[in-house]
Amino acid sequence: MPVAFDVRRFESIDSTNTWVLEQARSGAPEGLVAVADHQTAGRGRLGRVWEAPAGANLLMTVLLRPAVVSYRSLACVALAARDACADVTGGAVTPDLKWPNDLLVDGAKLAGVLAETDGAGAVAVGIGLNVAWAPPGAALLGADVRRDDVVDALLSSLGRWLEVSDASVASAYRAACATIGRQVRVSLVDGEEFDGVAADVDDAGRLLVEVNACLRTVDVGDVVHLR
Ligand code: BT5
Image (cartoon, rainbow, N blue to C red; front, side):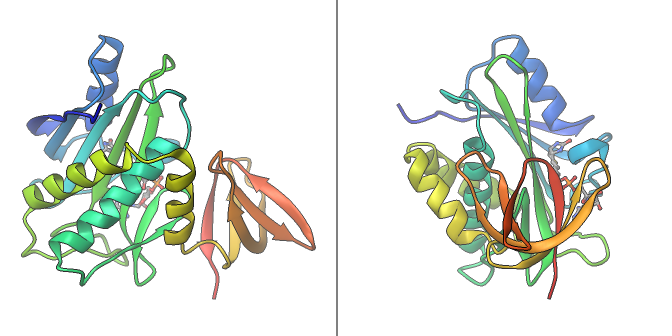
């Protein structure tokens, strides 16, 4: 059955991910969506802050209840956001994906995806996408783009990706992922850093990096595209 999206709008909220996780714990169904004009505690991965002035950007979180909690949920939202950008700009902007969770335009960050679980099978997949404002060095879609059009385009594409097989989602993610084939610098959470060539993203969403003819598997980390 296709997912029916139930969109709730907030003028101001702490974090759309926090709200959706709370609703998930209270038994809310798949397809609940929070969209906010402003977040007072928007967050990225690893305790980082997500910045966006009130009313400027897309800030949304979708509640999914996948059969198996995996990288698939994040990949579907990233692919849907990429489609939505192409859709609302008439094909002018088709972002690249960057492992693990970014959308890039000409190498600059346009959007970040944050997938969090409630520990009981639900996944809150949040996306912050710069529409009318971006911090220095980041990208934006364009002040003439309507945020509601991005929401509509993203959810209609997401509905389609959620119907697609795991293998097709994984191959679409790989095809759109600009990290694969690149010389990268990887930073792990324990502070270790190393350089290598990103060889692939496996079906669990881990980055495989070739370092001195050996493959290292990266579960959680940050990547800089070199050259
Ligand atoms: C992410 O984390 O990129 C995931 C961001 C997810 C934000 C959405 S908004 C709706 C939902 N509710 C939430 O509370 N969160 C989600 P990460 O890969 O850790 O990147 C975070 C880093 O990106 C920050 O440390 C900054 O360096 C940078 N950053 C912050 N705001 C940005 C922006 N608007 N555009 C580009 N980069 C930004």
